Image (cartoon, rainbow, N blue to C red; front, side, top):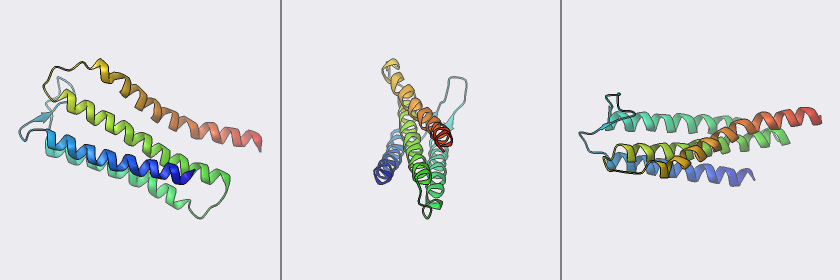
Amino acid sequence: MNRLIKALWFTTLLAVSAFLLFVYAGFREDQLIFINNTFEGLDRETFFFLALTLITVSNFTFYILSWRLRKQDNKMTEFIKGWLMGMAAALNFFLIVVLSFLQIFNGGENFNYQSIGYLIFVSLGAVIISVLSLPVFLVKEKISS
């Protein structure tokens, strides 16, 4: 099961990296990326490198934490390794949705934002479920032992 989760994580890592390049290429050179209407904005290079840093640091952290558990071989460490990779995959999916929303918001076209709204909640829900699954598993293990 952990190999499947690690494959899912790697796929989402490639997808978020490719989508970041796609979003970066879609912004004009003189365009500022707006987060909301009152913020002056970021230029596209600053946005690219901030997003790349966020993606790299978060995925590196989850991978290293999982890698540190490789020599321990019991049920709890196997679950934690899978949880770390699953959390990274959920975070990557959330970042893909956020990047797509920023691209649409900064595109200047008239777009019905309600049609993408459910994706934001689904991806945020995946992150929240991932975060809550570890304490639930640990409490269940504590009760059963």
